[in-house]
Length: 385
Ligand code: SOE
Image (tube, rainbow, N blue to C red):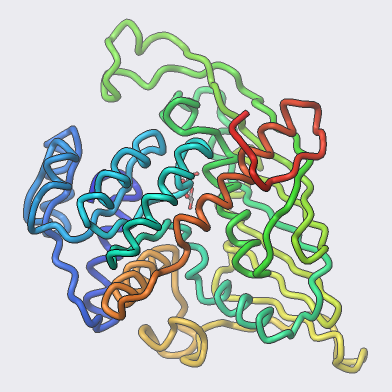
């Protein structure tokens, strides 16, 4: 694993719990964790039983005892590490968004396609696909239960940047993160729309806004000098993104991704309306899917609150008895287990790097549309800015 912060933690527990709860055909062995800060990486190694610490990702990728590289670093490093790992014959799991630009994502998808010819697998970390209620939503759409999809209403609402004194971390710097709320959390709802409907976003009209344009520099702990840590720096990404989209099957969709939805912590909301019914999900009540079947007699109509904790629901049989519920971390375990299973069976896992590229093309189209006064912007063959 390269990286040891929030995602490093989430993925580490994923690998460990996949081993314990999924009885995988291949047992993940936590060989080495990499990070420039040896002390911080060492602390993660101690907590999760990683056997070695590497301070250079190249050394980690070159280790003969490493078969899979899990990339949990900021977006500006994804392409270089992923392509090197794939060319070295290592399977790759890469955090989202796949890259910072369409050009990088294209190079990564091409490297993944070449590697796949030699049985080397790659996956991008859109973990919310693996929340049981979301996986159930996709199953129901695939089974035709909502009929022809007419509307998608997708939101990802957070509020951790409402305080203007919240520091200027890497997530607020375009050269590190690619974009702001758009790529960090908007990417999830774009991917969820593709996943649940089985359709692609073909064009967008967008608005982006940066509400707080300067923030305090984070200080010495982030490698800045004491003087610099007293100053403020420019926020170079969006705080919020709103866009309209069309789907390949003809549906109309709206998207909202913001870090300024005061009071909303991690509200990933997806509603799908079709000719035969509707589905609604909110991550803040993540064990529930609301299902409406339009054929039910109007007297008993409306949305049914389905508690997605039955063993017949996706992933649930590996966990607790009905009604005991899962949390945020389980998606990472499901992701690890699915990837291991794909490697063991010799098939390509999903979401693929090509799926990650499709999301990247939407992100680029949103940025282009916003920069050109919300002009309608097709996503196919979209390029950076
Ligand atoms: C920060 O906004 C963040 O950690 C994202 O980077 C994750 O992808 C999301 O799942 C939770 O919020």
